[in-house]
Length: 169
Image 1 (tube, rainbow, N blue to C red):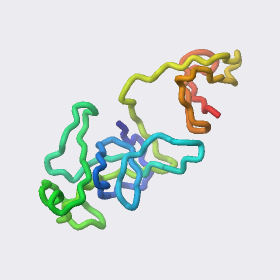
Image 2: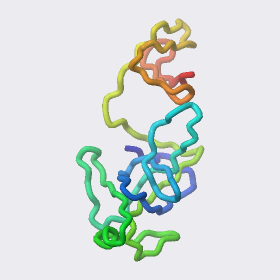
Image 3: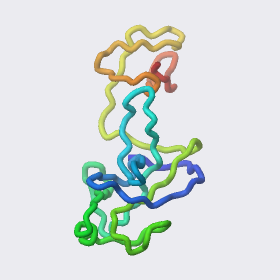
């Protein structure tokens, strides 16, 4: 999960969650048709998907907690019956205070935003095939390292690049 450690100055916004989508407080999200959906991994070098922000709150009066992710979450519902069965609290902005649609408050991110986060599992260590002595070249050799050109970053823990992030291309 993520948190904003340096704000962009863009502020926050309340948006409804897409039907059937579950989003967690601390998750990066994007919009699709004006509705919030989880932000996934890049699919290719030309992937134009961009996150709109980080979820900081839901409008659930009694939030549902995930022991797996150690945070609360909300699932979008569409029918009038399902929306009225919820216990919600008011949101702000362009949405009516009495609207029962599941909503999340998003901290908007921009080019100056700094976010901090963790991965949900252990990262697989990468061992380059033939690293150069000056650290200028990292050769990807392991088939298990599925990279996407121009969208993969390596963090070097040893050698000439120790402590530096390097982009795969």
